[in-house]
Image (cartoon, rainbow, N blue to C red; front, side, top):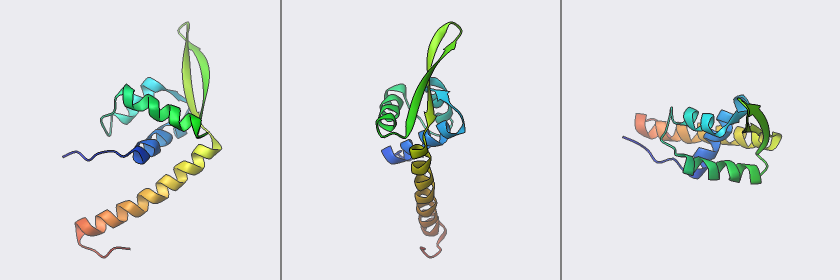
Amino acid sequence: MSFPISAALLDAIVLSVVSREGTYGYKITQDIRKVCDVSDSTLYPVLRRLLKAGALETYDQAVDGRMRRYYKITPIGRMQLMQYLSDWADYRDKIESVFLGGSSK
């Protein structure tokens, strides 16, 4: 069974991947595909949206004679990621309480 990924959750996943190190679009896609199905046509609008919001910034670096665009998280992006992580923990706890029969927090 597969669950749909919301835009906010995809933003959180991208910020989490990029927070580890500056990385490029193809690598971001490969990392995310380990946990959910995402296409380039889905990922690049997310990257543009996060850039526009100031959560990410870019820099270019030569790799094998070609320029590659890298993405890195900004302080705004780190704050946004921390909020997503907090929200995710609350959401996960509530869902698990229903699945496991406990009381909701």
